[in-house]
Image (tube, rainbow, N blue to C red):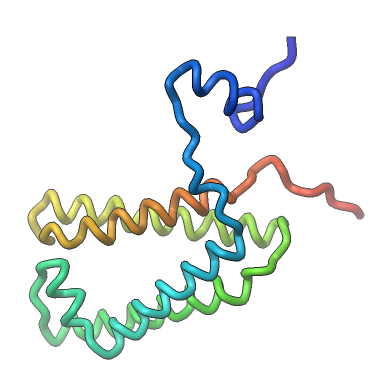
Length: 157
């Protein structure tokens, strides 16, 4: 009897419905579309943190100070880097570079979501942080679904 991988059509279409599991259709988003949306979101965050960080401080329910504005401006440059990376890698074929991009983004997104939840439950941020957590979890899931570990093309030497 052959082993069936968790990502096979058999497990997704035969086993999953029997077990009451539904496969999210969000993973059907193309890599190009996902990178485009991520790039736009990161660019909006770049502009916001650079020019008007008070808006996000208000949404998250945290106080702004000279130090927080300094950190927000530095953080904006990281969002600019994510925006540029995802924009210019939109057409990358399945490769080790694409896997690295997917892995780094989903790890970053899930980590930011967990940190956001931690700060919310700690009382340091208000309910507005949950919008960011939901967005980060969604983007993280989509990049995780695009990771295709084990489906890399064969290398030729």
